[in-house]
Length: 118
Image 1 (cartoon, rainbow, N blue to C red):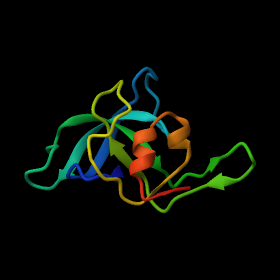
Image 2: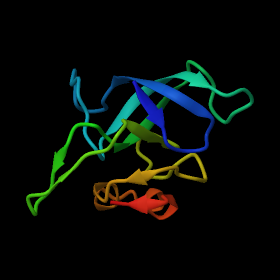
Image 3: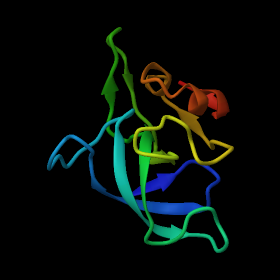
Image 4: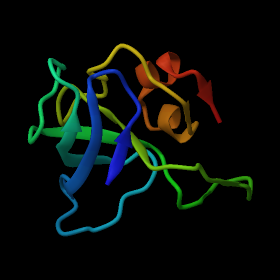
């Protein structure tokens, strides 16, 4: 289960798979996964039980960087994408901090919309 860090109207999502990765159970920061929306506000861009692609922007599990440091966040969060192969977000605002690995993965629009990049 993940929180959603954008303004599409979804609140909670659940991972159901990873494209081109088979039966993998875990995903890290910067991975694109397929989720089903479990909670959404009424009259939002996305509806409950809709299947959408997302990119993970925050993770409780620490990630090691090339310089030897680690990055870790307080929650697990994602941003909803327009299409599985697209790197464009569906929402127009990103809430909370994101990892700089997102920009390194090519999600420049998400990095520019974010409040803080760590």
